Amino acid sequence: MKFSIQRESLLQPISQVVGVVERRQTLPVLANFLISTRNGRLSITGTDMEVELIASVEAKVDSAGEITVPARKLVDIVRMLPEGASVQAVLEGDKLTISSGRGRYTLATLPATEFPATDQVETLEVVKIQEDKLKNLLDKTAFAMANQDVRYYLNGLLFDFHDGTLSTVATDGHRLAVCDLAANLGLAEQRQLIVPRKGVLELSRMLSDGDAVVELALGKNHIRLVKGDSVFTSKLIDGRFPEYKAVIPKGTDRHIKLERNAFVHALQRASILSNEKYRGVRLEAAGNSVRIIAHNPQHEEAIEELEAQLNFDQIAIGFNVTYLLDALTAIEAERVVMELKDPNSSCLITSDPPGQDRHVVMPLKL
Image 1 (cartoon, rainbow, N blue to C red):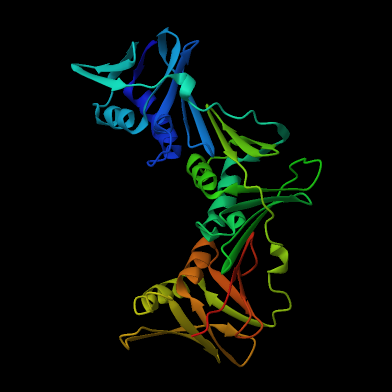
Image 2: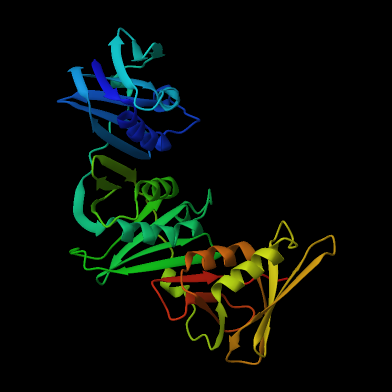
């Protein structure tokens, strides 16, 4: 195998693919890239057996072949080369030599046959969707995913295709985030898929705010995204996601309307003196204002007061301040509304007027 390529042309795909390569590996070959050359193209593959990313780029290929090389070492070498440098790679025996200018770097390799082959994705349906719209769906919900929860089906994001709408949903049992995109995606039937946490984070990293159309292939056990010269594949979580629509509060008769930015900044300041373990803040709404109160075991106290519109007399309710801030940061509107029934019921937070996303936060007993 022998090829040459400009530094920048190589750095972009390897920097993208290295994100899926785990630092702690059970199999040594999983710390490597699979590099293959043929027909004037260089293809780089990374996988951790759960997610896989393939990026390809044009290169001057003198002889075709494939081999695996240490992923992070290759990225570090190429990143440190001067801008505009030309890079040559030659495979001799079981060593790959990278040359640029007067520098030579010889890397150990493992045979390509040891690299895990991708399961063939049995595509059931293909959905075309605008890139920025898909990124928006992920950005507004992914923060609410659980992390290493024993309820494994919560460690991911639900893609719910229903009634001409794609909803992304995430919950960790304490809060819930839902974002809807009304788009006739042409699916023959309703479908729910749970994409694992790492797959969601890599998907989000791949997507940009452009309006190009990307392709989502939905399989029985996999989801695949095709974007330009990159192909991303993730296994799905085999489990049943909770009935999220039942969690969204209905019949909430108490509404608090606030200016979002002022609310966010007041919560951030009050959180400095909140209990580091529980991160609790108390909201006291009465008249035309909301007081935010935080305490900690050192008997320190923060009090913030904000103007608000209320359609009731008064209420006092506690929340985890991090959950409130995550929800408010996801909402982009200037004003938000908190909908409540009573101090023991979950709170629905939406933009005012309502937008695509809805956020549910459970109360905290303080």
